[in-house]
Length: 163
Ligand SMILES: C[S@@+](CC[C@H](N)C(=O)[O-])C[C@H]1O[C@@H](n2cnc3c(N)ncnc32)[C@H](O)[C@@H]1O
Image (cartoon, helix red, strand yellow):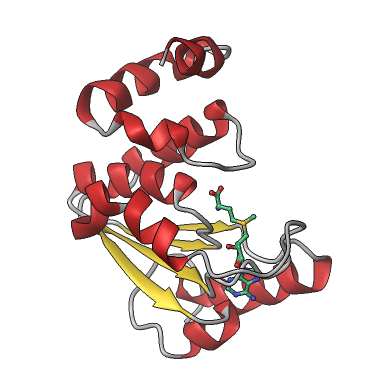
């Protein structure tokens, strides 16, 4: 935790979010493997907390659940929900294809009441999505074409989108 602290407060503007997260939520969230820096995870938490009560958040690309925990923690505080969208087959990841579902489920267990999972490709899942989205985090397939497709498919569901 000492290492997490020194990294997370490298940006002092994150200090209130860091204290708040450590005070209220599971410290195990810091240990989940991810490419996001600690500041980036705290930024997701901070953005989540700035959403309206009952906020609907969507994460495309949840992997092992690191970013999911920080968004779900904020959803929990705001009385909202986080929708996690992933194939959980490690698509597009340099480490190769493997089933990551069990690791995701175990890692996100402390936040499971605030999480809804949607297993499949992001553009397929979008077709049957019913809610209006307050916060969308796109972190699935990082290729230009896939990011563009995700934005094109999901943006209309945003509260200030056009759907
Ligand atoms: C970069 S990782 C996400 C990392 C995660 N946000 C974090 O920071 O902990 C990308 C994830 O997107 C998923 N993915 C890739 N392409 C996808 C697609 N077309 N639809 C759904 N999920 C996809 C992969 O299976 C992988 O778990």
